[in-house]
Image 1 (cartoon, helix red, strand yellow):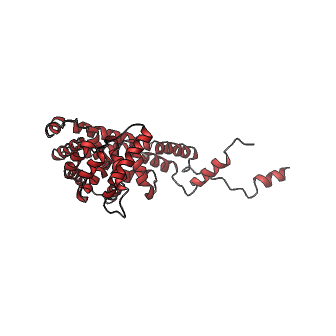
Image 2 (cartoon, rainbow, N blue to C red):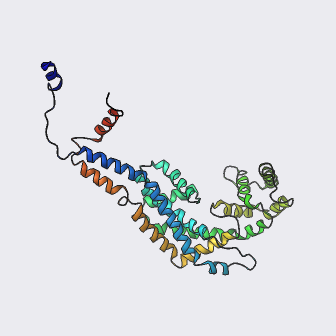
Image 3 (cartoon, rainbow, N blue to C red):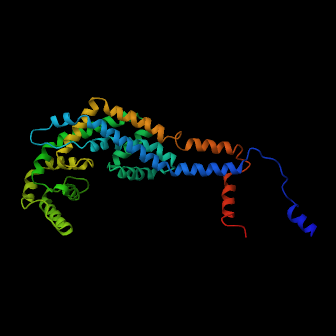
Length: 327
């Protein structure tokens, strides 16, 4: 019995030696803490982005009277300051996700989808191309303000260029189904060419039937088909309409002009810079490596001073081998 026990437990056994640098209990605690921090990153991102959106809305609101003063008589419509803020915020969020994705180990090909999900949560839309350009600018360390300003000026320019055709169209339009009209027109393009204007009447009647069948009421009027054929009597006019509705944050209403005016005033008076500075500071405070996983990683490194003696694979094997109580 003694020999059997000796052979089993002592023969070939490893000699004991003190390893003060390896503290498995503390290591497991730190791993758990780090996992908790990582799981809370999304909440940190959402909190920061909502704060940026709210700050932008507040900065825009101070220009309420100035925006309304710029409106032509008879076209009164309250500015939507949240939309004004969202147009700016979408670039801030996209830019910051270059670093955020690295904190979450998001694969490069999945970053765009992750940002789109975040923007959807915030009620914001952006085209994939603009999103990719913003991420690339962040990768190249282009200052955020230099990324945003030209994009806002491009938005303002599009709204100004397309304003006359919009005002002509909306006198007899599809209202809340204008975006559907745009998408159906876009579907008539061949190999990226111009909209096929010969299909205007077909598109109008198809949309009207769709709304009647699915919603139970009419959209547009009996005169709408003739109206759009008259308004879009050249490829140039049609192209301007499509350019306007291609912008996902434009509603195809007069209020789009208020959005453009609000952005213009914020640019002129330094409020876009204020919002960017606010966002950058907030990102550092809430979402940076230092504010999130950094301390946990440092604590983990401290708990495992000499990782060559015991690596994390052993901890994983331990967890697997002890998935239930000893039998």
